Image 1 (cartoon, each protein chain N blue to C red):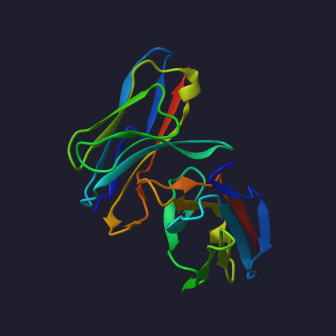
Image 2: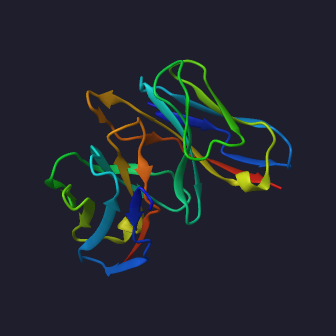
Amino acid sequence: QKEVEQNSGPLSVPEGAIASLNCTYSDRVSQSFFWYRQYSGKSPELIMSIYSNGDKEDGRFTAQLNKASQYVSLLIRDSQPSDSATYLCAVNPHTGNQFYFGTGTSLTVIP
Amino acid sequence: NAGVTQTPKFQVLKTGQSMTLQCAQDMNHNSMYWYRQDPGMGLRLIYYSASEGTTDKGEVPNGYNVSRLNKREFSLRLESAAPSQTSVYFCASSSTGGFYLYGYTFGSGTRLTVV
């Protein structure tokens, strides 16, 4: 079983809709959770971090964490074509100084 | 504010050749990492350095060596390149705050082709 699992997609949503991206992880005692956005041919860029259960909002982005169910999600409200990218979930387990990444979900926002 | 700088951006090697990928960060981060990214495989950790003077193997270390030259610089060496090492390589750095590891800052990547 992989440390971090994501649905690879592709996920397509119309412009203005809510895009929902999900991620599950295997280490029950994981501490830090991040979402990265990666445009084609570019490096990943950090967009959201979450450390405790519940929701965290930043502009059009909301990260949700449920440690009991071991999943973390990212909601993108009012999706824009510029949100079209691959979204990577990253989890820091309770041991070690590294993150484990999911394989990413490809999102396309259709104008 | 350069962040994380990687060189070169592109490289083509012949099988058996060697090369070193360079990475430098100017954010005073303690931890530095080398990942490779392959289609369908996601980002996989090759080596990391939690602090100056230490290095540790990641998920896919075979065929690679690293050097943490100082706090700023972390290099990745391919001693005898193989076609299986064709990939996009990313260097990243991060800091820690107590119990938590803060998010990575990535370099722009090196696209390596081994023929």
